[in-house]
Length: 377
Image 1 (cartoon, rainbow, N blue to C red):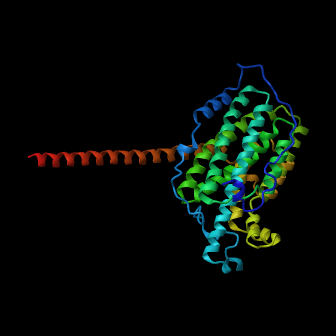
Image 2 (image 1 turned 45 degrees about the vertical axis):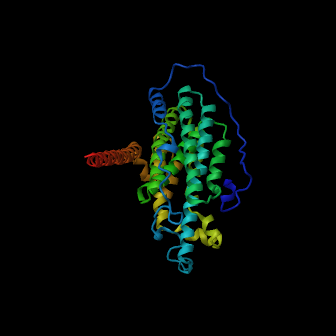
Image 3 (image 1 turned 90 degrees about the vertical axis):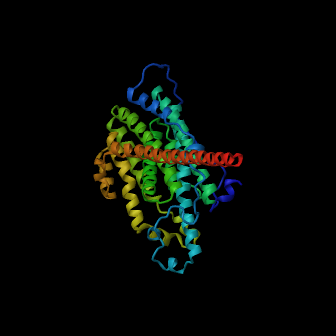
């Protein structure tokens, strides 16, 4: 079945073409490189994995309760719309919201793959090219995972959200080589980590938790890469150049804030857009999600040296300025550790199952030998 047949809404043209400008840069210095970045490149190579084998795709998923999220988190809960719905309709609403959410993850991962490839092409330093090549593979794997999850487990796909598409387009059209880092590694990856982490830490469903835990292990490296590269480069820029990038961050944060609502889903259930926007704006879940979203972005922006007055003012207006003091290293270390812990539990369970299987086989063989001996006697 074609993915096109699974879209909840018409996605438009089968391909989206973004006119791109900027130079492809070669480096003839093959020996020199930043020690930390080369170490991250080695880690990127060591940590490659196969989504077909590492993820247990045999785990079942109820498409009408993908994440086990409480109904209270749904924008329609407690409204006349919710009260009029049958249980079947409420299950279908949950399915659409899960599809919308994971569809944006899918489209964002394809965008990340393209941005990582753009970094390989345009960044002037070979050590950064090396690492970004490993990230391109990571993002391809993530897109593979989310595509399979949507097609096989939910059976429904949503088109890319307008705000996410706008930020991706702005990131890719800019000819400056650092902008794919800033748009993707800092803003879009920061959003993804917040969204992944919220679901990972709240869902009681094993397959989506497994997927998100493993994907976040990769994403922790990607954010570290963006911070290293941009922190070094932004020390060399003029005040005017830094302010230009801060303007981009402010606009991008507003786009990311406004993309979280899932208004498209409510429209598909017959709710007018203006009312859908109002309903989604005032949910407790959305307020929590927005706060968590910026917990990954704000400290990263501060760390790379973008902390001018207008940017700080924008974060005051968003109510997230204090997040600049979050310990990003600790968050990233936790993301990696949780994946290792999940592997350890899974492998231990598999080992116990293998031991039990062997013991059962030995026991069966012993019983058959005793019976055979008794017959001979």
